[in-house]
Length: 172
Image 1 (cartoon, rainbow, N blue to C red):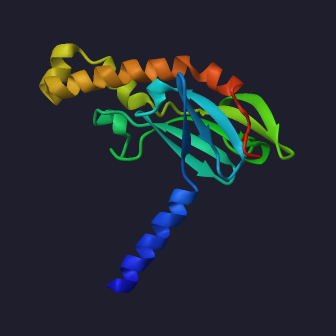
Image 2 (tube, rainbow, N blue to C red):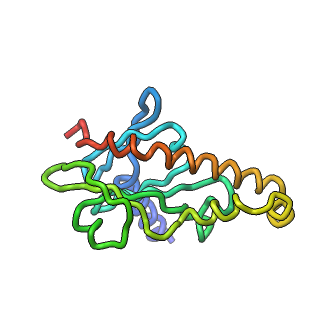
């Protein structure tokens, strides 16, 4: 049992070293990719509604809402929003809206979105007839879905500003 606890602790430390590093900014916050040595500026609205995975190819950003559909298909992993990844990854996947964002340490990085609409759960539930949705999910969950949809729209509206904020980490 003690061996398992040590393993879990070591795993938690490793994961924390490769995950999100955030610095507060005046009107938002800065995300620094520990593995890829780049940073982006994110508006405050993103702070409580996204999960950022720092991967060897770049970052994957997922929407994580307050409603059941807003938490993702498995209700715990979020809904894919965007990638900022290196050339090899981006062009090996089936992605949309591919846009060059910059170069860091000789690697070209691109912004891309998924070809399948992973935000379907909130988009779909937002379009439900209000009476039907309340009957199916309850009034409180219906309100959380509407709130998630509103935040999701705000987040997607700010993507161009995020892309333009891409740059090498200042600590580099």
